Length: 142
Picture 1 (tube, rainbow, N blue to C red):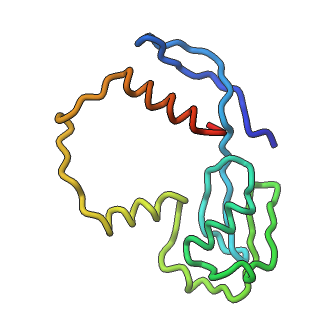
Picture 2 (tube, rainbow, N blue to C red; picture 1 turned 90 degrees about the vertical axis):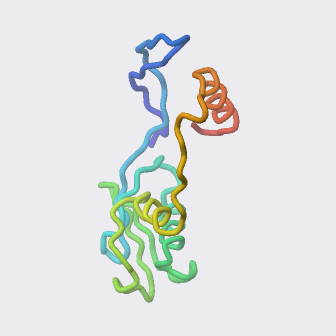
């Protein structure tokens, strides 16, 4: 599966929007299941899917070590099924609906909300372009 697709985009050049075609990184929706039980929907690049799935399951505390993995299947309809030893649905403390949902709730529960005045600092378009270019230069795949 190709990692790149061509799409119509809007690029802003010198404060002027311009429609053009560009190559972008493809993102695909996958449904992650453990022992046939749906766990989460992931939106990701279609590369290293098995590694992503195992890492996600481990980082969520749904398995304690790699030796619990009996099999990983990637099905044609974008379903990733991991067969785990010693897994019960009780290990799920709450329903996880998206890959970012849990981390967003953790931020709200564990961190103080900062009182930020949005008018204290102004960021210019050139600063945004500069920061974006620095990010692109540092990225292998973007």
